[in-house]
Length: 231
Image (cartoon, rainbow, N blue to C red; front, side):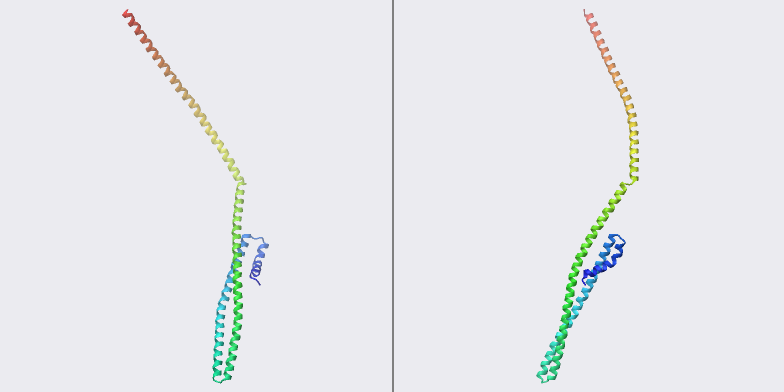
């Protein structure tokens, strides 16, 4: 069974109840991410176990090959000593070692395939997990934006806001009326003062003209008296 089909079974078995109850989609996404992360850990653990086992099996293969070579040398030595019975036994032992080496080689091939497949599955699952995480972040951002919009619209549609604005406009009109009354009072006082100063300036001008007229007349009378005395 493929890792993704197995992961799908795990996720489906854990999420069907939540989906039927229409739970929060963010919670479902987080659960999916958690399941994928747990599967990644499981895959890495299995891969590490296979790699360790391959190393041990490789050592066994080396030992069987070494034993086969040693039994081969012993068979040659027995032949040189005219001990065919020993040579025959050594050859049988060498064949057994070679057979065991062949079995171990098959085990190594199986382990290599398992490690290679785990590596490919890990890469695919990691890519899928990154994709799901990115979609989850986007979903959370969209959810946050939607909640903010709902909150803003609910505030805008709240009657308390309208009431507050109405009271504010009423107070604003009251302040305008009070300011208008003050300005009207200042305008009245301003006109009275300006009138008084204007009257004072007019009186001063008349007094100046009167004084100038007196001086002119006085000078004229003096000239007339001087002319009569001279004649």
